[in-house]
Image (tube, rainbow, N blue to C red; front, side):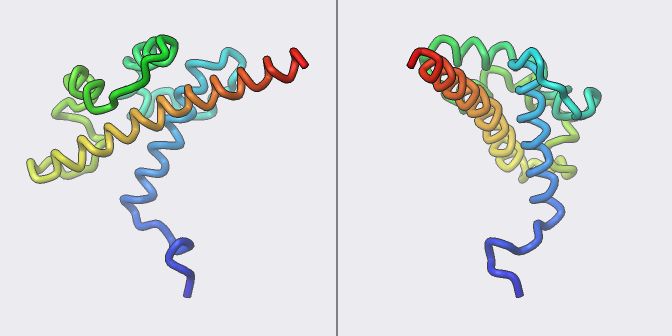
Length: 130
């Protein structure tokens, strides 16, 4: 038997992990000019989150930090449309909080990708100056 941390992912966990990997790919292709994106441009991640990438970049560049809950709330019509197939297949009202949580965490994944890119860039500048 595998230890709990090494158990196979169930279908919903696999779907969530794949969503976050595609989100990272999407942000890298948006923020890094020479990044070769192997993700499908027509996938639901890019359809849902693509329109708000510029907003996340602007927030990151402002240095003010991200309030993910307020960000999602202010863009709910884009991020949580009624026909969003990305956020779990069931569209029951009971799942609204789960959908919101997944969306909010995906926004954090996108933003944290920018943070890491910024830290790597600063690290490269520091290395080059020494």
